[in-house]
Length: 106
Ligand code: FES
Image (cartoon, rainbow, N blue to C red; front, side, top):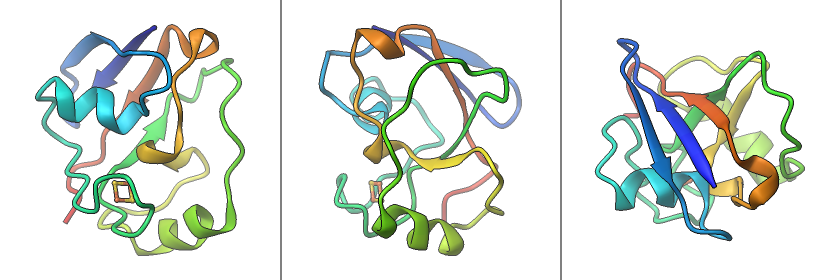
């Protein structure tokens, strides 16, 4: 599935992410700057924060409490469309998903 990562300054990079990898891993494995992912996907660092595109119509994984709580401690402000990208698994249903990266993760 193809995922589009948009940097804070508007540069779009489209990456083919393997099924069942997370949106975070898709970025890290492809050298996308803007997602730090210090904890490696354990939902404990908050440095894989993304803003899901406001126009998104793809079904996304449900947000669990751990993610919800951690989103209050990200470097950039939490918005309504904030998610931790390590908590979004990629399947065919997410093909075409667009995520925007915050200005900083730390
Ligand atoms: Fe640490 Fe997502 S990689 S919370």
